[in-house]
Length: 396
Ligand SMILES: [Zn+2]
Image 1 (tube, protein in one colour):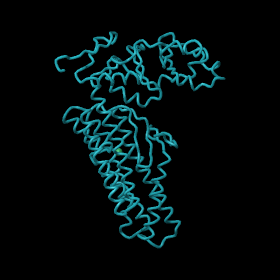
Image 2 (cartoon, helix red, strand yellow):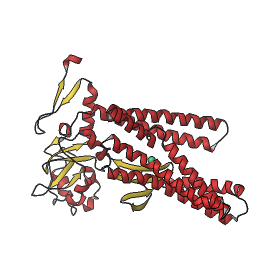
Image 3 (cartoon, protein in one colour):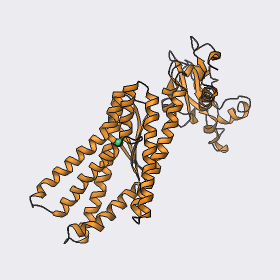
Image 4 (cartoon, protein in one colour):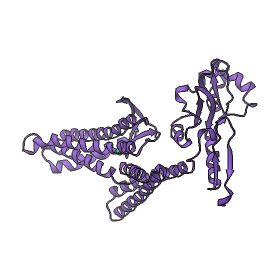
């Protein structure tokens, strides 16, 4: 999901708002405006309006703090964080890569609900002085509501169903117990799917019994959980089937390179048709990679500017291309490639470029692994040798 409005970086993490976050604001503001004149009567409409907006803004701030907690701990556990986006159904912290141990996965997941509980305690403490009868009842209701809604957020997120935090905690526990990260992910995703369907059903019953908007809301959240959980289940199964595949097994070796000082027009005239690849690293005289040119980047240069634009001008800079090494597990590289706009990774051995991995290489590896369970890729002793696929005849 692409953020509509960037809020810059908070604690080093990129934070953005998707326009649909206005839905949360609208729901909370209308809820507060409808209920509070009944609960604490006697204020001007302006006072209710201010209290309603404060509630909505502080709740969105609470969501942000929850996601930031995930992001900060993820970075501490050496998992790259792409950024945080707040939207209609809450927040999403986009992590690139996986925690290395079940303990790290547990800490990244658990800190979000812990932050929500902490916020609830803080809002609760603000309400305390009002309980003795001092201060404004409207302010007491505002902060009391924020305390309650943060507890609800923490408890809902602790339900053991991926992609909720509780699902991540369940996954970490299964991973620690059974020792298999992919299997643990499959089961927590299945729990997520079942829970999501349950919510949809609940919402439908709610709708049919005449509770209108609330039922629609549960259906929406349920469908979202089912969609994400199903995708995670597929991803975990894929990861399981590619478990033994190394980057060296799938990469295209010794990729063809281009000279970055040549113009786009020159490349199109001389190379484009003859060369068969769709991505070319730009390498300097010392073998250092200066960028990656892809056909889709070249296509974006308007015809009138092709003669004056060099390949280096349109190339993806090296720091935005995922790096790998021949002995890395392909499944460890996949999450990094998912966050990369060009869909390719460069493979280095001793700082020298030795290969390139494209999405086509990966779908080929998946197709091979799907052919037969007994077919497995045998790693060559060194990455310089060709990949061999052997068939284990005993098991057929
Ligand atoms: Zn969370």
